[in-house]
Image 1 (tube, rainbow, N blue to C red):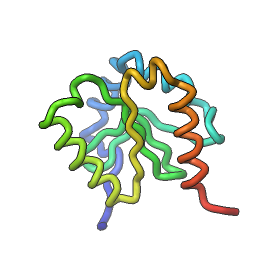
Image 2 (image 1 turned 180 degrees about the vertical axis):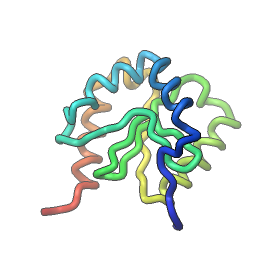
Image 3 (image 1 turned 90 degrees about the horizontal axis):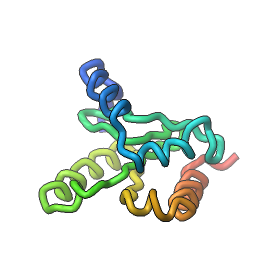
Length: 125
């Protein structure tokens, strides 16, 4: 793939609004992701790659994390998510998707999945 455009200036305001108005599941997961709490990995919130904005992104391991609310469970949204995930995968970014329910009711499982994925994507010493 050619040049990957990240955090373009025309996305600044939209990313700022998304951060300011983040839903409870995103706020809850951010509590665990911030300050390099998982495997000493830096995550960024509302990070743009091309025209897409990821809920969370860890540049060191090229990992995107998406929290899917109810709006993601219809045919149109699922087609958009599939297109988006393909684009991100083509940029060598793995995308993990969790539902609001998983984040709110199974945080241990979410964190285990994140930890395992980070370890598998980190280069061997």
